Amino acid sequence: MGPTARTRRVPRSATSSPTPISVRVPAREDDLTAAQPVNLLGLDRAALEAHIVAMGERAFRAQQILPWLHQRGVTDFAAMSNIGKALAARLAASAVVTIPEMASEHLSEDGTRKWVLRLADGNAIETVFIPEAERNTLCISSQVGCALDCAFCATAQQGFNRNLTAAEIVGQVWFAEHRLRSERHSPERVISNVVFMGMGEPLLNLKEVGPAIRILLDDLGYGLSRRRVTVSTAGVVPALDRLQEVAPVSLAVSLHAPDDALRDKLVPLNKKYRIAELLGACRRYVAHDARRRVTFEYAMLAGVNDSSAHARALACLLRTVPAKVNLIPFNPFPGTSFERSSDAVIDRFRDILLAAGLVAVTRRTRGDSIRAACGQLAGVVKERTRRVVPIHAS
Ligand code: SF4
Image (cartoon, rainbow, N blue to C red; front, top):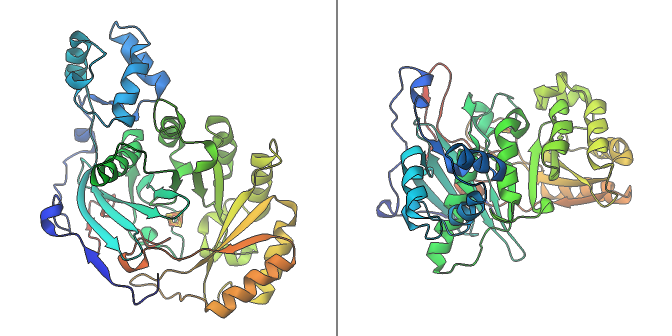
């Protein structure tokens, strides 16, 4: 998608509300969760079984309920025809199935679609659908905002409010999958890949991301294979080892610099976990499977990290890691001073990596006209100060 591509907003009649979103600020954080019924969307198989058993029912009921929830998109317990009226009534009294509400929808001419989804507490997150010939990828958020403050990222500018719950993470997939099926008038599965590359650092929310991944992988849930689910991290080293235990899915690392001095400036988390430590964790992550590679994301920033010397240093750095390098033409956003490297510079950089024997590709920019491209997601984030930071309508 080039910069001249036009953007189409979905007519207001097709959306549940316009942006920017006005929000009610709760008096206390606790008010949001006190005495609320459990949202079944966030329970993986084991947790749902435990919930059902705690209600005095038999565990196998969970295996009946999961496909209704995730595969058929049924939110009304009474419509789950094989669980019995008594259990349906008891679930209705103790649980809910709550989907994030669509605040607005933005379509790019390349087919990329961004949804701004409103959460129960008035925050809003962004979820992006990227259709391609071979796959349909959903890019989901794991936090409201992000605390890591990467220099080139729009999400970082919004500040950080809170972690998403597993239900809010899975809710993004539920929403997108069933909305798209409904539009297509087809029960066929639409989303083939899920990437945790939206708002937030997923490894700082592994407690909720873990169950969400298990639901995505469960044959009774979304049935995705491990290689079709990707967690992208800025490099939270201890959590990388835990991810291997919790749900060893595909791994992407936001690297963006070949040395600590430069990475300290672009990805401040690097001051805590140095590149050598990060690469050690990456090697451990793929050690048990010779076919696995770590994808290293590298935003091409003009005059910052895109010289031939940077490319040679990157090739040298990654020679001991099973790696694939994704070169990402930088996607500008309001207020940034960074600029995108030229196509010629990106090609030269890629060719140096290829000549050194690395797998390297330039990622095609998708959805930048609707600010849905990598690093452009912003949402509506109420910072801890409770200041409301509105998104800019595309
Ligand atoms: S690039 Fe990722 S980790 Fe860094 S600030 Fe943005 S959302 Fe957070």
